Image 1 (spheres, rainbow, N blue to C red):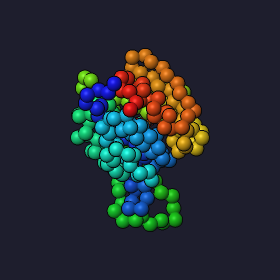
Image 2: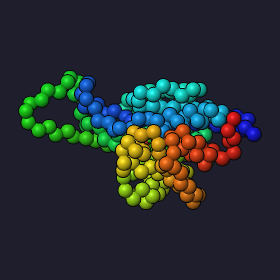
Image 3: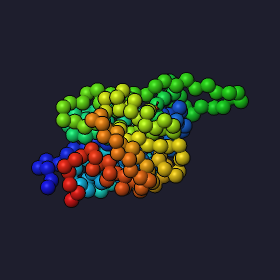
Image 4: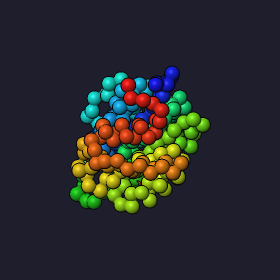
Amino acid sequence: MKTSTPPRLLLTAGPTREHIDPVRFLSNGSSGRMGYALAGEAAARGCAVELVSGPVSLPAPEGVSVRRVVSAADMLAACEPLFGACDVFIAVAAVADYRPRVFASEKMKKNGGALTLELEPTADILKTLAARKHPGQTVVGFAAETRDVEAYARRKLETKNLDWIVANDVSRPGIIGMDSADNTVLLLSRAGARLAFGPAPKQAVAGFILDAVLPGLVRQ
Ligand code: CTP
């Protein structure tokens, strides 16, 4: 049975880029595949899906509206007007935690010596939006960790005011996690659920996550 109005999902995916000058930036190796897999699977299940994506080389999943952004600030600005109307927000993006304090509008020239970059924190998109959560909304975060995965994930579940967190071991890049086809996840909920899954292709992991966070929505 399908619900009469399809759930509205908002997702973030991919990395962000924090520019130093017009040709250089700080970023990370997120491929965007986990977020795109979740968005595509949710659309295939009949959800209305908005995806706010950092720079990745993936096409828009079928039936998904994609807004492409570059920096953490852009990503927050794109999500803010959409958050209030969504039923479920899933933050999959690997958002850069810091950005250069100063952006050089011209390409920086090397001067032979060392270079010190001063960095300032970016906005925490998930924490900012979760603080505005209204009753009935479900907010899901990801926790990319290289050690003490469950303990750090639980801390993020609490400090970011989340309903679910998907803990992700990224200690073996290219094998599981950020820039690989497969993933192994541990889902923890505010209500006390603890569900492990994988290793499995990201499409299967996406299905598992949606089964947990969207109970009652049956596959079409
Ligand atoms: N996140 C976000 N905005 C940020 C940083 C993180 O929305 N500026 C979200 C991510 O999309 C993810 C969750 O917060 O859903 C946790 O991200 P993660 O990188 O694991 O943790 P951080 O909060 O950045 O903390 P730390 O780097 O200290 O582990």
